[in-house]
Image (cartoon, rainbow, N blue to C red):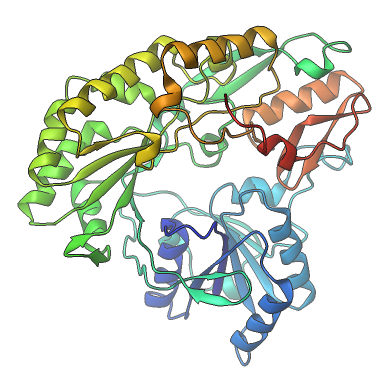
Length: 454
């Protein structure tokens, strides 16, 4: 079986698809590989490859990690016509399978993938019984438990653009936290309508959010706890090696600093030669452990392990936007976190990495629906005054993406309910920049993506 997934061509591997392929192969005796599809892949070439690969085999194919790509949804439709049984799993699978609420009453809403997908699976891979391939249809959910299957074959990843190529993994992933603890925080926020429709509608909308308002993970998975240290070490042991050390890996945990010291000590005790740990975390984790960081970095230095703060969720440098995003932090918190990293960089120049030119790509969302003169001036002023352009600001900002199953999706639908304004859909995303009939709908995501930060 082939598991098709979004891939950018970068030298990383995603844990979820590799874990699933390994489980199907080892536990269910179903030969499986992962194929990451580039954005401009040759459909004709892919069909030729699939025809050869599935000759004499049952035509079952899986999709995971869609990233809102319309071309992957269109590919599902083509494969369905060719007689494939379509399996969907991974992030937001049930939400994407079902689509937006009341889509039968509102033709413009995302109707979901239930007409294309035969079986939608949600949960840890070891909860997937083999008989689902034969009799399972619709949605099947399995509960998350601490005893996860964690064996990963990192060698069976391929990419496809013009043809199939092996894709050696140079950056892996290791699971420590299942979901995001901040996603447990329930908050009610008043969000104004997008700037571009305020001549027609100015009433703020109350939104109930779990975690960040743009987050679809909180609704999809929530928070299911953290793994035991021995489970994390077991995954690290299974990573490939390069130059006598384990390849760099992202530690999947929104709050990794609380247990990082124990991980470094246990790796050293077991003589596990680590090279680099990528941390994707929140600002409040850095601030809460500011006093612990020197000790953590001392441990890293003793083991010659680099700690890369690969992506810190700043998202904005405006207090108002941080509030609209439901981030639970202020701009002062961001300044405090950055100052901590800058001070520690002087003490641990080789083992603390956090700068853009060291491989970090921090969260900065722009444009947003609320961009107006005062907010934009505040952001630009804060960036300049605190010299974020030197080390923090990414090369390109990320336009706000509203997945239909996020709290901001609820916000958009409430605006549509109260007005005659409708927002277009692009795959699983809602295009907040394309309201009709007020605006020319010709603006595209490509135009928005071309907008660089100051």
